[in-house]
Image 1 (cartoon, rainbow, N blue to C red):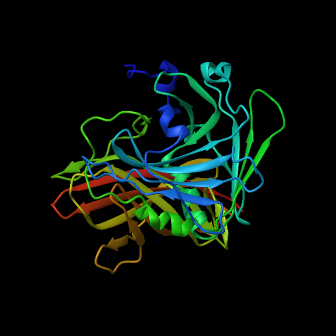
Image 2: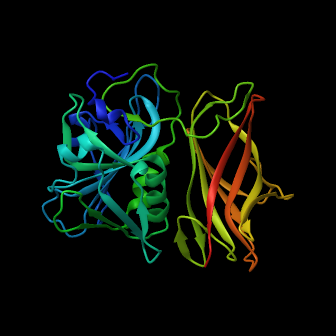
Image 3: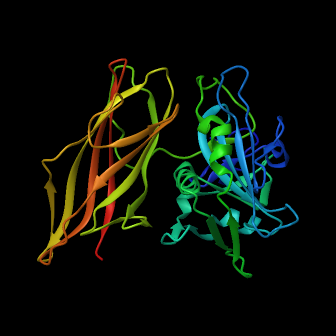
Amino acid sequence: MTLPGAHPRNLSARALLLAALLLSGTASAMTRIPGTYTSYSASTDPISDINTGLVSIDELYDRSGDTYLVFRCASAGNPGLWAYISNKNTLVTQADDDAGLIPAVVMRLGTDTPLPVNADNQTTVSGSNGVLKPQTLGFSTATAQSMVDGLLANKKLVVRITRTSGGQPLTFQFPAAGFTAAWNGINQCRSTGTPASAGSGVTLSRPAPSRSAPSTTGGAPKFTQWNFTACTSQGRLTSALTAGQASVCGFTVNFIPNGAAAISAEFRYELEYVENGVKGKLTLDGVDRWAAGGGGNISAQVFSNRIAFQLPLNVRLRAARRYTAINVIGTIVFDNGGSKRVYEPLTVLQP
């Protein structure tokens, strides 16, 4: 099915439809954080009360103001964090877009290990008429959230884009100064309302995860996406878990709000391994828990449309047995009696 005004190829995993108005300006005034490169616009949908605010950071060395990074809180009347970089150079050509090609992107937060942004977490951007915006590249919720977390930790964000059409790689630097104030200025993308039944302008389209759908009980909200963001170990940010190193790994669950509030969660684990050339799987006995009222060994940030858990993970480094993945099975319980289960693997790397 093709949405009205959509470019057919943009309905892929890298699809993002954006009205021209949203790229050129906003309905409400921008507020600059004094002495910084950061601005924000706080706004709320007058019907649904959904947070439609944004934060914009100008590139550190572009004095023309043509290069900036934007975080937005909503998409087509539905809450959902996403981000995009816009600049004066072509990032994605029409030929690339037609062929399903996407630039090679690497991002780095502060002195953390540089992380590649895979194709599934990038989005091409077009206007509501389906015309490609070649100077703009979008990023999914998972990548945008990793950027937000780093900027909130006062880490400068550097993004390097290597275009498939050739040319010198483009390196953009976005300072963290002022971001926390701007993020708080838009209420950390929290909303007080529920999604509108229909929207216009920007639409973020991502397919359902390619794994089994979560089980549903009672009135739990619909989960739209769940994934690991990054792991922190020994002061470094990594995209996978490293065996033998105690880590804290971000795990985000996105959902469509229905008025129910998460009150608790528990996480169980499986280990996949190779030993003597034979693959095996081991179910662990331990359980990690989180409770909204306190208690448990998991911390979490709860937003109107997502929960960002911090899971303490540690896989033993063994000579004879090489662990390849840890599978996380989570159950989240809501205050209306509903609950949902999620399942997600995380790659384990050897140091």
